[in-house]
Length: 266
Image (cartoon, rainbow, N blue to C red):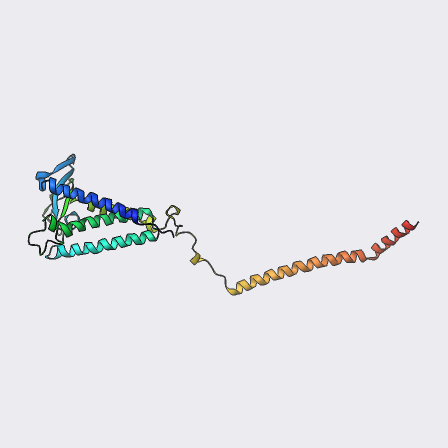
């Protein structure tokens, strides 16, 4: 396991937060809300459209008195949890792709937390009748992909009979959406095993915990078999030496030696 520093991933988070807040403040100070200040970017389908969102991403909200406060508190805890999880993954040597995706999700969470926490005070955009401007700020949305708008049929539960259009969102929402999509698309690569390029060996390879352990009886049988093979080899070598000695001591060999000595005397 090779630990990684989470600093470069937090740097991406800070850059995305700065971009998100810069765009939101520019829209707030230099654009008129609604259709009056709408700016077309690409044809009639990609526009800048300034709206205030009192709820969650893509305009969803909790419809009771303290729903906004609960949502803001939840965002704070989620922001802290995501940051801690990012550090945890980096120290475990997780794939870089997963860490970049988590950094994007963290940037989106922090960006919307800043809106909810402070915009009600500094931009005075808390909804009318809010118990306090703190934690009741409305999120500034501006990216409008205008591909559909109209009335939803009445037979559709909850939303039936109402006029809707495609959601208007911001940079922070985009970061969360892209980060989640990356994790879903590459989850097998991120969580199924780490590559050598990321500093870890594949999890699917041989594992020491799965090694087979032979019983003591089999080990004893193997050792006994080795001793027996050694004992068989040693007597065979000894018998070879004995055969050589017997051959040298046989009568035929002694007679041949005597005959050679007589020849030498003659």
